Structures are given as structure tokens and as C-alpha cells.
Amino acid sequence: WGLGLVAGAALAAGAAGGALAAGRAGGDCNQFWDQVEAASGGMECWSRGVDLFQDPPCDCRVLHLDQTVMGNCSIPEDLDSWLQPLWPRFQSLRVFIMRGTYGSSCTLSAGALERVGDLAELRVVQAAVLPLQSVPSSWARLAQLVELKLFTVRWEYLPADVVESWVRLERFSCEMCFHFTEVPGELLSLPRFTSVRLLGSDICGPAP
Image 1 (cartoon, rainbow, N blue to C red):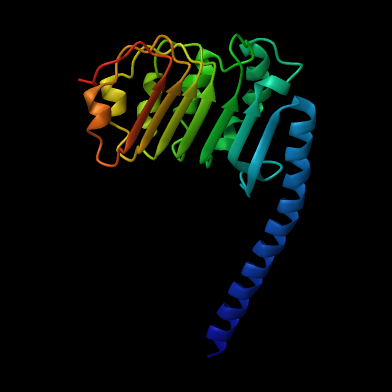
Image 2 (image 1 turned 180 degrees about the vertical axis):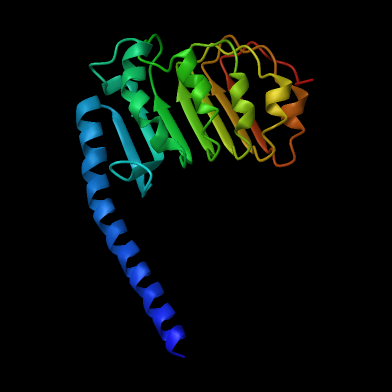
């Protein structure tokens, strides 16, 4: 009994210490992400978490980037400079939203797009003004992806080998996608897939 009481007390103390640490981290994290938002002008963490491996111990679960209000961002390298120190804090990211307007040069570089494929917990990607002609091969690792929504991208197609890995994908949307030429049959054959929406494409017949 004595050993059980000691073990129980130790567990309780550990839980209380963890709760206090998480509470302190929560306050530190709010300050950290508020400073990122203020400095960048358009990068917001809408859902903030705790990652004790970071200093301060903060991560982000929902990230919102608004290119239209980032006045100090004019080329992809500018956005890279903001993202570079933050990538380790995105390992539990569930939702990535990037707003933008046609012709904007404040966008993800090719290297940053590749790094998005390392965010294995992503469920939702909504992105605008992406520079590549197709989805990066690294996105084949986004096995948890449920929704992919694009706006004003230069993508021409979706590689079948990447699409086949999105076994949880339910929705694909591409608006103002003037270069898009093909909807692969692999997309329509995904087990959970329910809808595809294309606006601006010359595709007028049924997908193969």
C-alpha cells in the first residue's frame, strides 16, 4: 500500500507539473504567434498547440497566410524567410490556408512547396497562386489529406502516382485554373472521393 500511495502521489505530481507547464506554454505561445502575425503582416496561427521540443514550446495546427495584406512580401524568397524558422512548428499542422490574388509574387517557392509534403498530418490544403505546373512529388506523403482546394494556379495535371496515395481525399477544387488539362481517373476512383470542381479550365467532357 505504501508503495502504491507513493507511486500515485508521484503520478499526480507529474500530471500537475505537466498541466502547469502547459499553462505557462499556452501563455508564451499566444505571445509568440501574436508577434509572428504582427511582424509578418499576414501570417496567422488560428489554432495554437504546445510542442515541448520547441523553444518557446509552441506549434500550430491551423495556419492562415494572406498574401494580399503582406506588404513586406513581394517575391517567394520573402515568404521563405518568414517560413524558414517556423517549419519545425508545423509538424502537427492539420489545415493550411493561403490566400492570394492573380499575379501575386508573394507565394510559396518550389522548395517550400516540396516541404509541405513533409507535413504528414495535413487534412486540408487551400492555396492560391502556386508557381509549379503540377503538384510536387513530395505531396504523395500527404496520406491524411481530405480536401485540396486551389485558386489561380498554373497546374496542368495531377500525377497519378501522387493522387493514388491520397486515400482519404474527399474533395478537389480548382478555380481560375486556366492551364488544367486533365482529371485523372485515379482521382475519381479514390474510395472516399465525392466531388470535383473546376472553373476556368478548357475541360468540357467527362474525365477519362
